[in-house]
Length: 318
Image (tube, rainbow, N blue to C red; front, top):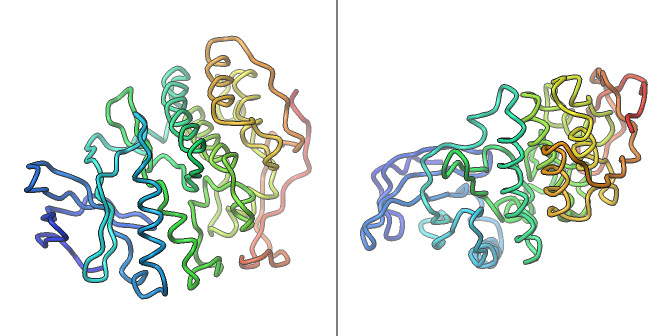
């Protein structure tokens, strides 16, 4: 995508590029009419050549612009100009949750921030909106103790692009946080967002993501088939109560997860407080070591032939 610094898009003067993601580029821009800085999220130019993309983009933009919640980044507007489609959003310059990752976080802080994201998702799900790409980079730090979830609708806009639909080289979401059903190309649900937020909580409390590999295909295969490395093996300070919450949210099957985000947040807060609420362990067997080795596997719909072999499961924690 061409450099837009110094150019005008709509009524916005582009100041500088601030972030590059897999699905868009974010710019800081100046809104002269209201004398304020905003964030412009600009989608890839090639999308404008896709038949009916413009109509889909406008429909999805209207859908997400109506979301109003303290923990959802406000969208002021959207537009299309010279082959570029963009969202106009509130400018948050406190960084993202991704900046805090890399080492285990205190449980109280982790649960406070995750609960806010869960509240935002509970609200969005009630409006019929599934995020599809919950990850630390999409959680903006409005304050050290207050977050706002961004990028609603971006993955949905892209997944409707007929030139990209699961070609094996493109994923609509982020592989490290992708629920098994999304990795398979199956219909998503609110539980899909719950799984992704469960991965975020796992990472916050252990300092690591549960699955990693050399290719996106190998990572998504692990989400579908590999046993979960138990959180307490990555951080012994993770309590059994909190581990059970994470295991529930990360169940391979959607029906085995919490019924909604509110139940997930309630269980996490209870576990952080030293008490528990009833949590049924997922049916999937988890492995304490979950050591994997990549090898070819029969093609899944829309994916290349890459997989991982998982060590034999050792035990299930109840």
